[in-house]
Image 1 (cartoon, rainbow, N blue to C red):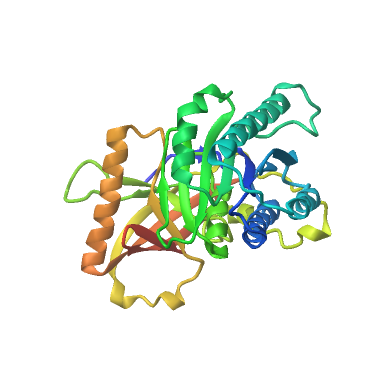
Image 2: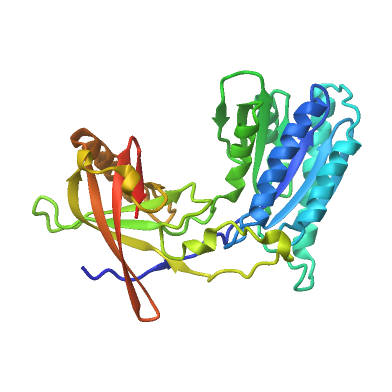
Length: 368
């Protein structure tokens, strides 16, 4: 089957990230160290990966009885020592956690957000040299607090339009709590996430910064031959989920490897190609799941989910999701897997690949 070759961009719509920490009471030095360690690990990971720039710029500040900017926006790549120094200075600067009223905190928060947007806007509106040229178009402000995030979200949603929001992508409130009930409440411009104090969960939250924000194109198309003698061929469009580290499975996967020799060099990495293929898999056969031993499969497993491509119209997107979930359910009910084949061509070289698709609840795991 002749399938036209299409390409997509990757990591070309990543926003700058600004971390705003509420260090006032009831924040403690121990919890603050948990937060700083989680963010530092994610920033180090972002700085040490091949491929597209996942966190283009980073800034950090805190509020207590006043507002203090610890780190103005800097490019993440090549500035890891400077960023780590700011983490250390934050711990040193925050010696007390004075208690203030909620209204006092809100007033300082409003001032802090205005200053962050003002700093980001001035940096991106004033002409600069190629070395300092901004590489992001929008900023996400993450507020980390132990206060009631729902009240903060409600207040910010009411006043957010009074800010200079042309460069603002989102404000995300991360509320750290002792409750075991994790939740996320999505707003128009302000989101609220509540998680328990746990280093793993903190890192999982901040690793969302590393995911590709470009939803202009799907990642993989799964093509089915004529089904039930229907003339219309079914195509399910998917995205690769959580493919942050070591996706050796697909061609050009080396663009996403960890740069293990980072500390031997300057940390300045050559950018990858601007466009990567939209991969096409053609289903060739169904096989019984009982006849496959997963331990003998090559390649690292990758998760697929229905695409979030914004170019799919509402009805088409819904149909695509329903087809995906129906496929998962049918395969699970029958204990069947799918065999698929792809052909990737580059510079007149054709490289066929063979894959096995394994249904897992509402996801598909793909092996080479």
